[in-house]
Length: 208
Image 1 (cartoon, one colour):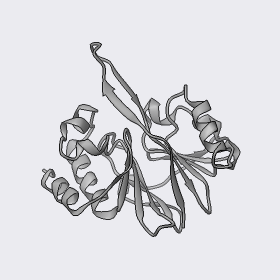
Image 2: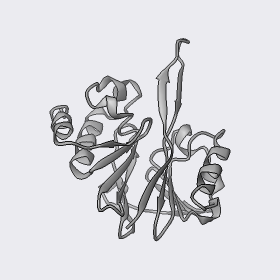
Image 3: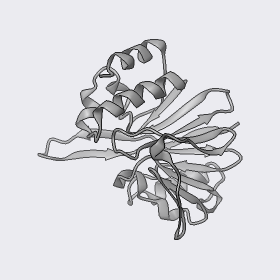
């Protein structure tokens, strides 16, 4: 089994300034057979990540995989800290200058190990992915990036719509799909939340 540890909670708020918001993504560590970092925040957050890893008795070279749920700057900012890791950025898989063709676009799941897999969940961008983890508590945790902005966007879909969606129909369907699978969701810009049957039913009603 794997242990899922939120290293830094994400956030997003609309600024009073015109055309401006304040945001950073949630950064999550998966400790297990392979050590995995999901979403590495902005380029100004290297010290936050290395300090958080140190609290888990890890250094960047201990990380085997970096997964960026999509390619926006607040989710890839410190990927270059992890030079011994294989990198998955959206639908792109690489190590140094080698790129590995994988059919995320055909709906295939990329299995990292017995407890962790990366699945395609387009919507926010057309190459978004979600990391599914079977935790050491035998719960399924979905590290979903901006498929979900935060818990509040369950009852107020304008939150995720206003954050930008390249395919609103696919995003609504994938939000419901992930909720049907997971016990917990770690969203892109807020704390982890538990999935209830009421929440699942709400998301099903939002599918066009």
